[in-house]
Structure formats: structure tokens, C-alpha cells
Amino acid sequence: MNGEQTLAAHYLRYVNLAANLHPPLNKYDLLGALTANFPYEVQKRMISANLKSNQVALTLFERQCG
Image (cartoon, rainbow, N blue to C red; front, top):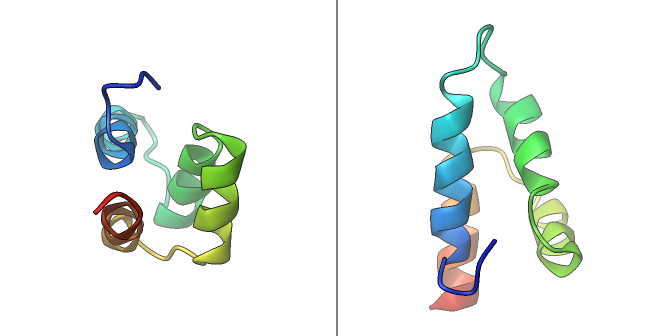
């Protein structure tokens, strides 16, 4: 993740890439896989938030950055 990219943009980039997987990941596997693409401190916050959907993840990032 580069310094110019927001957490939400980074997350959405990988959601869009994962949309092309065959077979597609279920939402829980996708959330787990995406969590690993973030720095450790962000991973801890994502796990603590008990993410259930992409929308909840994006809301978390908006609260952290906004």
C-alpha cells in the first residue's frame, strides 16, 4: 500500500480483483484474505471490528480516516 492511497481505496482495489476469481470466495473468506493485505495495526482494528461485510469494512476505514 503506498502513502497516497487511502485504506478504503486499497481495500476496494482488492475487492475488485477478487471479483474475478473463479470460483468466487464467499464473503467471510474474502474478508479474511483482505485483512492480511494491511499493516498489522490496521489488521488488529479490522479483526476487533468483527467485519461481516465490505460495507462495514469501508465504514471502519471512513471512521479511522475521517
